[in-house]
Length: 357
Image (cartoon, rainbow, N blue to C red; front, side, top):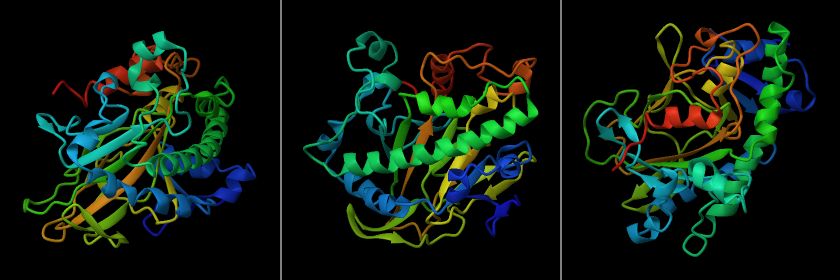
């Protein structure tokens, strides 16, 4: 099949083609291969717009709750990987990220390791039960879970296409490996992000001014198109307004070092390949550094941004192995060591972004 692109050059897959299991290998190679940007979008996904519209306006509403209410959902024992997190992540070396808040939970299962207390204690970042503000903000759970489960379902179909492409290049590649990673996982993680309005800072915005440059370390990340909100202090005046700055939003760094603004159409789901898949495919599929640029001043005044990311990743004991005949030099993922479990890989990655505070 011919590769469909947006007007900005982003690969487009049609949900119908995914359901019908058409061979989309050329599109996968164009998006996720060495010369790709590590990202593609999927169009025509039923209920996606409905679920996006239900969840993203809740971001600024929840973030505007009184601090004592927000603190009820802060979970230090999981390294802030469940519940509410603000100001714990490192934006850049020496700079904590005060520019956004995040709500983390498993989008598929509230308590997937019930009764497995030793596992929860050993891997709290992945295995702890979900934390919900049921009394203070009951709307969050159903909206969060509906959107996350839909994104995982579509991501599974994208992973099947990745497996087909990789198997055509590596005869010894385990059949359906990436799809099985997602299908068997009890530890997918979703993140509702709320970027706060910047009302005073007049410094020039860099591409990493709202979120620092990084690679996702999951197998596959599903990403909602961002929603912008007009704010009056902590009160939402109107949601889903146009972004007032065309340079604000998601940027990726291409293999040649050039940086590209990525515009995800409003009703499309974006999928980024992660470093876990880069290892499992011996570098055939490549994660790409990405960042988020803040809205310039004064357009940034009283405008906030929300989005939602779903990280599809292996269970903690899953061993990351390269295709037969390849070694760590083919993976080209710095923190990876041969035969690491995903738990070890996750810890090596997350230690770069969080520290005691």
